[in-house]
View 1 (cartoon, one colour):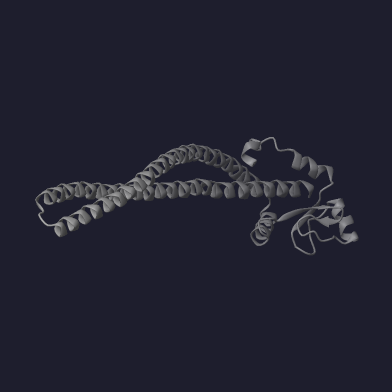
View 2: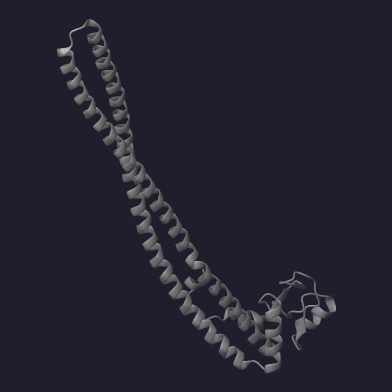
Length: 255
C-alpha cells in the first residue's frame, strides 16, 4: 500500500506543479499589459502637450500679425496727423495714436507671456519624449524577458505533463479514479499529509485510533473531515518519496 500511496504523492506534487506553472504562464502577460497601458498613457499625454504647444504657437502668430497691423495703423495715423488743420481733429488723432500704442503694448505683453508658455511647453514635450523613450525601452526589454520566461515555463510544464502521464499509467485504475475524483472536487488537492495527528490540508484533527492505523500504512485511509486521501508524513518511506525529485525541472521554473 505504501508504494501505491507514494505514487499518489508524486502525482499530487506533479499536479500541484502543473497548476502553479500554468498560473504563472497565465499571469506573465499582465506585466506587459501594465507597461503597455503606461506607454499608451504617456503617448497620449505627449500628443496632448504637443497639441497645446501648437495652439500656443498659433495664438502667438495671430498676435504677431496684430502687432504688424498696429505698425501699419501707426503709419496711417502719422500721415493723417500731418494733414490735419484743426486742433480738434489733431487732438482726436493724437488720442487715436495713443490708444493704438496702448493696445500694441498690451498685445506685446500677451506675446511675451505666450513665448514663456511656449518655452515651458517645449521643455515639457522634450521631457515627455524622454520618458516615452524610456518606457518604450523598458516595455521592449520586459516583453523579451517575459517571453523567455513563458518559454521556460512551457518547457517545465511539458516535463511535468509527461511525468504525470507516466505516473497515471503506473497507478491502478480504481485508485487513480478515486484520486481524480477528489482532485476535481477538492480544489486540486486529493491527498494530504498528516503531521502531529492533524490533516495538513483541512487542519482538522485525526481521531487517535484512526491515526494509529494511519501510521501502520497498511490500508488506504481518508480524512474524516475533508475526505481527502491521507498519509503519515513522518513515515520514512513517504519522506524519501517527497525528497526524491531528481527529475524535477530546474528551480528557476518553480519561482
